[in-house]
Image (cartoon, rainbow over all chains, first blue to last red; front, side, top):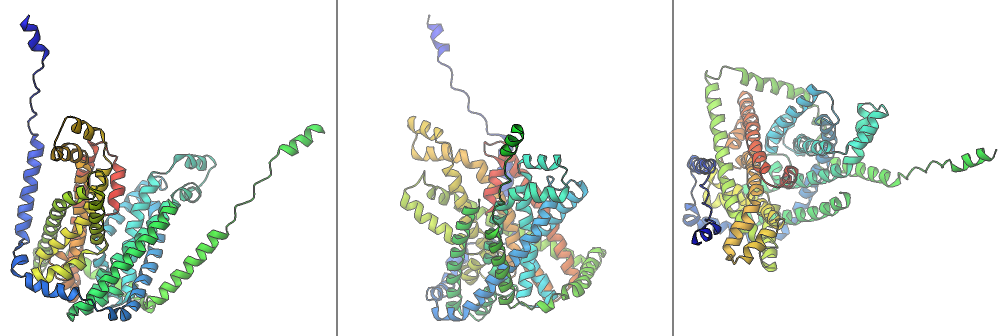
Length: 267
Length: 294
């Protein structure tokens, strides 16, 4: 009688042992972190020791020289112009590469593979490397910035758009095939209408990115607002740098809002 | 006769083509803006042909550096400088990602509407947005170089601060998208607040968040090269110095190392990301799309 009651209350299942993969993974992560920290000499010590050094600079940053913005607006115009030209041509060329980098629109396997490889190489270099290359080729100035961003934008635009093309609705493609459309007609009339809203939204996103990277571009010699920051920073005019950084904050925020508004209407 | 007339009546008229006026106006406006941009950017367009005349020459010089015996002087030095710089860049990126990841966990919880008080959410979101607006370079210039001096340590911290902005936002969005069922169950069972956060919220978002961290690591490798030009160490510093002295054979080796290592790290990290996501309920494409805005 009493024997029947005890099996009815099941024993609490045993707690699973921690998986070996997880432990190995955590050990690997900890080891990598320790090694990387040692490699770069990671320390937070200066935060306490040299805080007064930093505080002098921060204090200057807290008193921005607003009158300097009168000189800065031409540099802003230059930065925005650079971004407009580079994103326009970058996404236009990127669209062509996107068609070549998707199996939906490119039915030649060797060409598809070659395009994928080319784009991976293009994307692996940071924008600053392109600026340095073009500064060496055409000299310091906004032309180098435009060319660098142009190349950089091709990579991003092609990747994002190619992924959208991969996910396109098959119906129009079948219809185009059934009516005997060639590769170009297929891409133009069966694919492009479907990806156009996404593509335009990527174009706006890339424009935003280009405004954000203007500091880097200018620092490396590509013209625009970044060049102004570099010059003022080298002269230790932190009040002026502070005014520019705050104006950058406002401009980026405004452009983000504008482009988000447009993108919401598009997609 | 009767049949013919009904046939002509039922034949539908071809619909009028929709107007193209809006598209045309848009296209014209775009062309005007681009032309204005080309003019206002003060670009010296006359130098454009230089790319083709000079470009070929420099490219062959770069290739020449690559095909030399890597164990002969001075190429052995070039190769070891390039690999050492890349290793430093990867370390910066890794430490930056770790700092960003650790700090983004509390920020993410504070910025999630279904976890925190609305006022806290708003304040945290403003901070995260402010961080995301400014590029890492600005943090490095303002705060880190005066305190930490030039070097990879300042660079890693700048990458870490930059990562908090994006990772915090994505973590918060992932937390807002969880299934409320387990939360209710834990609450009904009388679990304390910390246990609810750990075992219902965190468990559900962990795969997605891990994928974001890896994605951010890939981005940080590129960003660490950028920080190099202001003297924050890594391969960027080596690269900008090589450009200053126009050592094209060295530049060729450096670019080659950057391309190969970045492609390799992207491939490994991408494979791990797909593996992590494959086991969770979240769709792969959704994570990719969210992470694309990193």
